[in-house]
Image: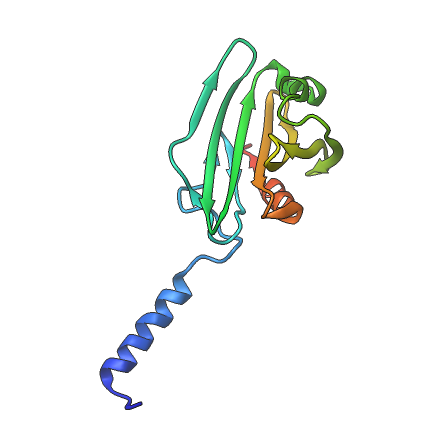
Length: 157
C-alpha cells in the first residue's frame, strides 16, 4: 500500500472518530434523566428509543424511557406516589409484572429482582420516599448489566 497524504488524513480522521466514540459506561447522549433520576450507565450500543411513556392513574404516576440497540432492550421507569414510600406496596402494584421476585439491594437499599413480563429481567427499589425505580433489560443482556444500570441510576438531590 502506498502511503499518501490522503491515506494519512483518512487514518487521522478515523482515529479521531474512534477516540470520540462513547465508552460502554458513557451517559446516554440525551442526558440520561428520567423524571429526576439520572441514568449514568447503559451497555454499549443502547440508545434512547422513541418517546418517553407517561402514565398517570389513581394510584401512581410513572414515566418510562426505553432504550434499544445491538439486539437488546432496556427501560428505566420512575414511579411517583404514596405507594412509592414502601417497597412492598409498590411491588404489590406491579405484582403481575414480577410474580416471583427475590430480595436484593440497589445502593444498599432493599430491592426486588426477577423475571418481568416473561421476557425481561427487572429490578425494583425505592430510590427515596415517594420515588420508586424499575429497571428492565432483555434477558440477553443478563443480570450483570441489569445491576450495572440500576447501580448507575440515582435520584437528583
